[in-house]
Image (cartoon, rainbow, N blue to C red; front, side):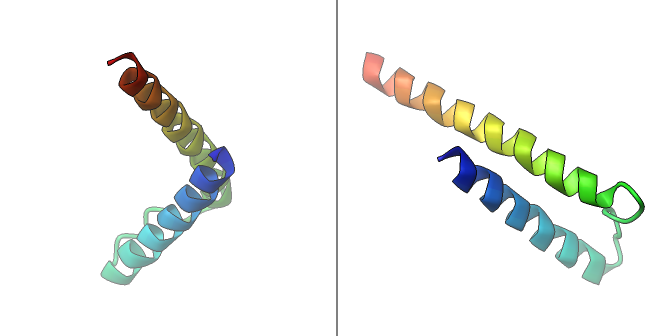
Length: 62
């Protein structure tokens, strides 16, 4: 499931970057842009997986 979160986050950030670029806000430009996409997607994907695991654990206790 974590791979789905990471891939989904990468695609989501890429689409948002494209939309912001079309509007004139070029927030993901420069030499470190690909690292921001890659590592940011991994970190957000891991956090989403942890959040999903905690939500499942909370529902089982009730």
